Length: 79
Image 1 (cartoon, helix red, strand yellow):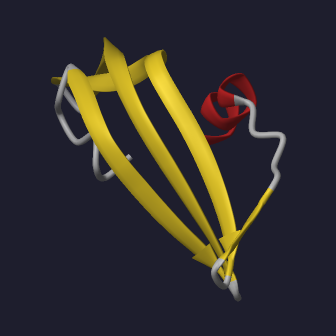
Image 2 (cartoon, rainbow, N blue to C red):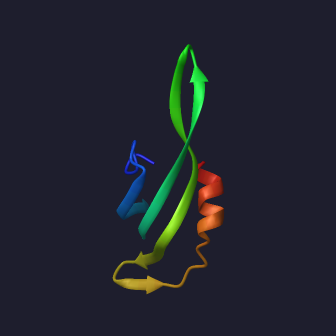
């Protein structure tokens, strides 16, 4: 979410590590925002991420491991 920031469009790579496993998400997204009232201010919060294109790779050391990545499940967790 830090990589998306306040953009309405994101294209890039996000890498995450869990012990010896590296997860790399390469994606192009349209970011839909919804204004929410907060202490008198209206802050645009991310309401939905629309994937234009994505691929997710998982590595353990130099070896790529198969994964069953679901963008829909991913979005429901981070939003």
